[in-house]
Amino acid sequence: MILTPEQLAELTDKKRPRDQIAWLTEHGYRFEISALGRPKVLLKEVEGKMLTPQIKIKNRKSTAPDFATINKN
Image (cartoon, rainbow, N blue to C red; front, side, top):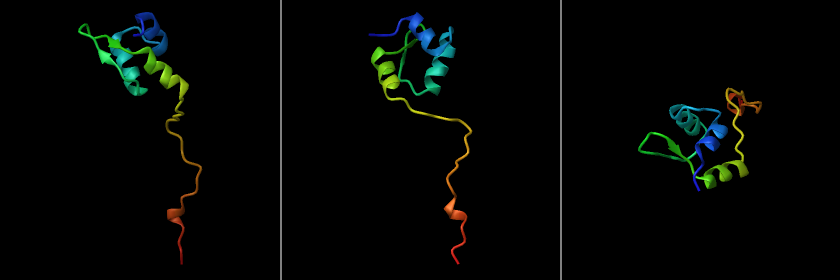
């Protein structure tokens, strides 16, 4: 089953195909592009991504200590 245009717009919050393609690419979704230049996404792809969430926080600095900077004299 392939997502309908309405479902794709709901997933991406984008209406234009090029914006949808950019969003899908940025979020790691696999898709094909139709002869009309519209992304085609399998429902199974969306279900798989939604069932196994991957937390990505941009521009977050690590709170772990940097042991490489410790002088071992």
